[in-house]
Image (cartoon, rainbow, N blue to C red; front, side, top):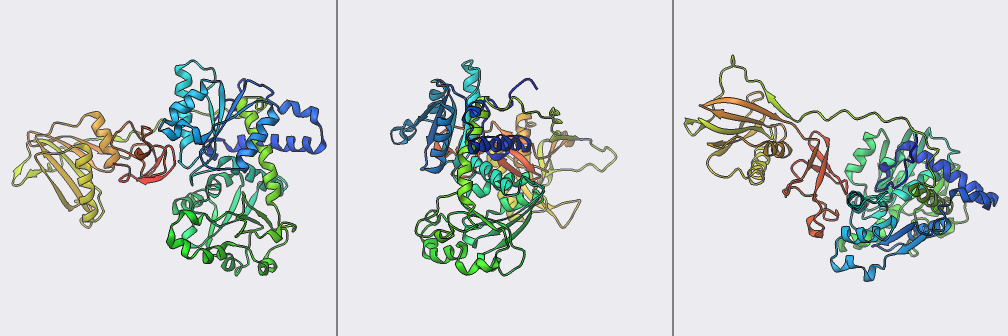
Amino acid sequence: MGENRFRGRSLAVINDFSLEERLYLFEKTKELKNLFKAGKSEELRRFRIDDSEFGVYEVFLESSTRTKESFKNAAEFHRIKISNLDVGASSINKKESYADTFNTLTGYNNLVFIVRSKLEGVCRWLEINGKAFAKRNNLPVPPAFINAGDGKHEHPTQELLDEYTFLEKNNWKRDSIHLALIGDLFHGRTVHSKVQGLKIFNNVQVDLIAPRELALPFHYVDEMKANSYKVRIFDSIESYLQQKHIADKWYFTRPQLERMGDEVLKIADILRSKISFRQEFFRYLPPGTTFYHPLPRHKEHPTIPIFLDSTPLNGWEEQSINGKLIRIVLLGLTAGKLGDDFHWEIELEKHPDEPFIEEVAIDNNRPVKKYTEGVNPISHGIVIDHICRGETRKEIRAHMVRIIRVMELFGKGGEWITASRENPDAMKGIIFRPDREALTESEINKLAAIAPGSTINIIDNSKIIKKIRLHMPPRVYNLDSVSCNNDNCISHPSHGENIPAEFFKISENTFVCQYCEKVHTFKEIWK
């Protein structure tokens, strides 16, 4: 195609690499692994960046051993400059913004940053900020940011090595996978990356095994089902083994009970027993079953007991070894050393989003609807009708208060809750503001985000002269009054990064945060 598609690419979530791109990465990893096994050291040169000026920075704001050392060893293979930010002495801990820290390091000719943080969505924000910094300073390639785990959001490089390992075990067949996910599915970011990552297989069955306290959040379950995965839910390994359709691949995660407070710690032993393998379970396993684990195991309470290390169930050691290989190839792609022979179909331009502001023709043959203030008709002003139609009186009332505050619709007028003319059994809200001038275009766009489905009636001489129906906008941004309500999101105001919140529509009444991918209803994004 005449360009390297991978050079300078960030990997904030697994979906940042398309299915075809991941398959290409896996082919290169397979090739690299075979060269290592065959001892063909000379042929490894075509995988190496081999540039002492190419800077990779490891920034681990949360403790890590395997991921950090895996990337370090991958960088050493490439014979490139590898640096490590001393978190203890970092200005990030002295209230310097993430943007300033990483812009400074980018200016020192560091091109790839491997970032782990307790905050979610960090790499997406840094990617956006880094591109703007590169453009302002005429840098030929923007810095790339690789997510090495952000809070309980995602861990995309672990997902890459997991997918590779599953394919390897499947003899590179992608027709189907049956996977049991076991353990702390609530906090387990390696599991959360599988919601989209497993789409690499054509038919996916996922068995979720966790007690209620550690269960996979419902929106991830919904996403799996939307991806056409067959999903089953069990509260323990014991209950799972009481049925006959048992997965041949089991993926365990470490329970992070220390994050969940004293009440959970009181029942810690009960919770661990539900997700830990025991010797008496052997007889229920189908032939060829393999266990996986992103590691580390808890040394006192391992969900995969140590006595299984020397059994054929052990797939986690090969899985761990694959981590360095995957990350060698990933760095090679990001540097542009690999990827010139990747071919892809020309991507068609997406159709523009449908307009969300609709002017409705006024039917002059229909009886004119009169809005009144008390007994007097409104002669001039605006009326916002059909607010939260079909919801309860309490829900409608609460949201109208929110609309008035956000839109600053204070002053003369009132609010009603009444039955819908189209459906007498459904209630709706009405806000009327006599003598209020028509809303500006930006105000109408804002109202569409906070009151989708409503209509604006503009009244003059006691007649409706214009009617506008509002639909959910595809994107909400550049508004001071919106905020992600995930306290751990990098954009949350409590972190002081001054990051503008941004949301994308994913259904008729829900948005997703641009950074942490938290799903919100249209009511929840407003401060």
